[in-house]
Image 1 (spheres, one colour):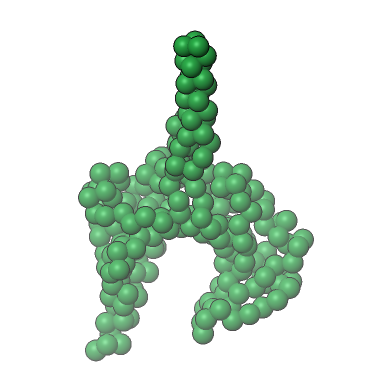
Image 2 (image 1 turned 90 degrees about the vertical axis):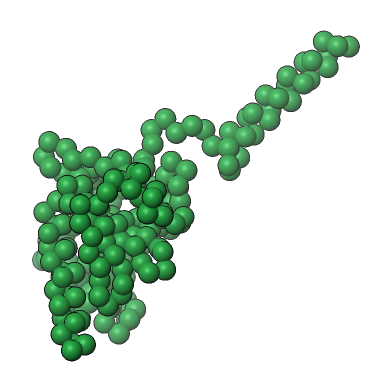
Length: 229
């Protein structure tokens, strides 16, 4: 009888362990982590993060990593320059949940052609129009490279956590109009934007895009201050 009791206790324990592994909250240890602070610069000075290489990895590669198709749209602003964005909602990477927006890299001629062939055009804001691509162009976009990654964490990252994971930011710059402060890590192609409400936006971009990014913020600040004056 004692042997049977021991056998059932061991069996139930094994089942409990199996459930702990399979059910949410009891995921397996991640042997290949994809964490937002694991950023590297390869020998070609390309940014690598989440197993993706900016300006080299394709949208199709990101879909494999994120295990989602994402929502692909084209947006045009009042300046008239279109951009291809792919929105991935509630992505889980290494136990961390985030919304992720990819900006794809495409030549201007291709962007113009995609815009002209858009199946439906709607106005998403007063200054932005959204263009939905047709099915053939959706397939074409899957083979376009990823230029930048916007990572919006579900959990707030306080300043002490940011410093412990990313280090001290060499430069910080605040947007006059919105109050968002950007922690700039130029050597990593990274900006961590912290809003006055405490929400964060991590923007990964090619190294050559960092300085123009900073220049745009400064120019917008200058214009905003001159308009206020």
